[in-house]
Length: 438
Image (cartoon, rainbow, N blue to C red; front, side):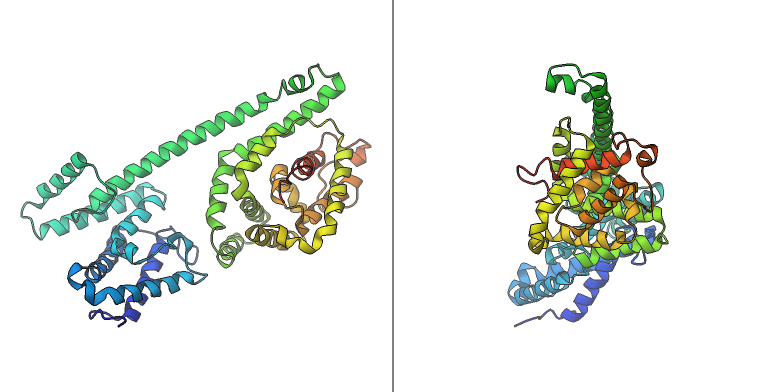
């Protein structure tokens, strides 16, 4: 039978849904140009009126009175929405859009306006102004003493609690529930951040007795110096992993790279263009991308690095073992891409493109991040190790990370040694078991 709803054609309704999607994109806080989206009370009210339109249409389509007439129409609408969502450019943040979503469109809009955008004074004032004005306007049409009726609705809601759904025509009730949820989420986040701060500060003290506990004896002066250096490296890199800024970036990377490749590349390219291709902004893009490589195994990364014990082998031996490990992998180049997670491989290819003629930018990234993110089967690993080889042998490089060669000393307490140590942890020390990145 197909589409039979008399008030609007399926084509026109789908076009209106596309307009609704554009509105939902703005609730992310940004316009398609990348500029901030400003939500004043009037715009919020217009968005909610859009939601009311879709609710009215879907209420009639799903009404028991018309269930036999419009069953095929609902099926047609779902098929059209599925086709819309299948577009690789469709925003993944609303990838669950369906007729059920449109049936509660005002909830959908308010939830995004409350949870997605930063709740600064201006935005919160605009949001509360819009929803209170709309509720009062609705009540004024049916209640003589509409102010008392409004307060009574809010009082009853406080007594009954709420199920999180838009109830009784009162936007304020729903907003209050969602604001309380956000407040609870923020409280939980602050508690986690406080815990991470404490854990990060304590990390530097955890390893002071590690040597004695592992070896049962006190180290001689030379070994103690090496152990102190090891402790400093481990403390510094673990602090990076546990820093709340890093954790937030991991969450951002998880959100960005959950989208199809064409979408996350657009996001990263916009970041680069808006920053004018400055080195500092390039580093932020590189860091975010590398965190994207390990976001699915983030907990494993932290656990593995935390469990690493003191390595008595000198850096020169660890360097040689890295190259032996690489040569052992060279026999499997044919299956290189198949061995890497598809999404991770796409990110590594993007990073290789960014760093192909800017290898020195590696030295501006955390050693533990570079070591854990770069898969040993990736061409980027060879690029990174090649730059390390230049530095290790004192050959020319765009950026010198230490002066050991010039000073006639071994690489033992320098940035290069730290980077070799981190690579050894993630690519050699686990090779006898299940490889960390395999």
